[in-house]
Length: 155
Image (cartoon, rainbow, N blue to C red; front, side):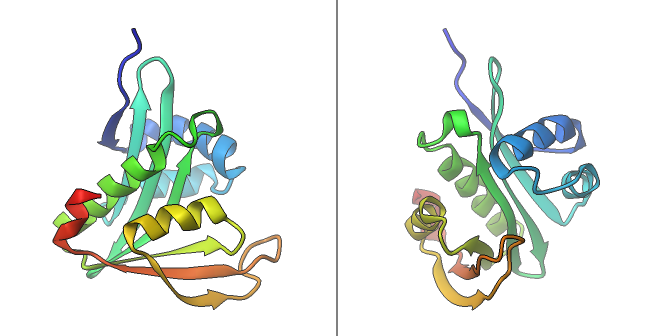
């Protein structure tokens, strides 16, 4: 019988697994140095969903700046998408950020990333602006904001 996925905070011991997931899900968005910084900086939060027989399935990371959580990555392994894993790690990230004093969350998402936009809408994120030509391929980024509140516990 397969074990259930577990949500936990990630640290530098997860570096190799994060690099593998980044390569599979984000096409190598970050370098080893960027991941090392993400996993070791105390102002950053990185949440993972992992399963004994599979490894790291999903991640959600962010940077705490005063009372704002700047979400830097949300990803699920392509073989495990559409199973609620991204929602699980994003829920945990927002909860931990709120526990550490965050009252707002923000992120950038590519204009054509409809599945991500649908996920963020479930949490109440709203578009506050657009960064023209933000991504390497020339796509625009939508700037999303969310006011964190106690109702988040129920998502």
